[in-house]
Image (tube, helix red, strand yellow):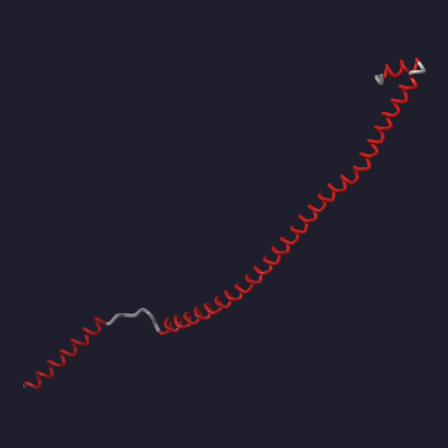
Length: 144
């Protein structure tokens, strides 16, 4: 009887263990199709990540090219403004020099005219000593 009792006891204990194992078993709400979809989604994410990285490298190259172009334009502006400012300073210097040069003949002519005027007034005064009517004209004009 002991072996039969032992077999029955083992049978019930194994039945009890299998029931407990089923209770402890977690029910997964995913099917194999869901698992396959997750694997495909992961593969697509990896592919998209690689594409994004490639685009990022490509964009960085384009930005570096644009930065070089902007640096070239900035250097061109520096040179252009430098040349324009130099030309303006040159023009101002030339204008000042030309004005001084152009004024010298005019000043010489003005001083000559002044000397001629003084000579003319002196001559008229001397001539008026002999002619009384000229004395009155020169007095009325303020030369005597």
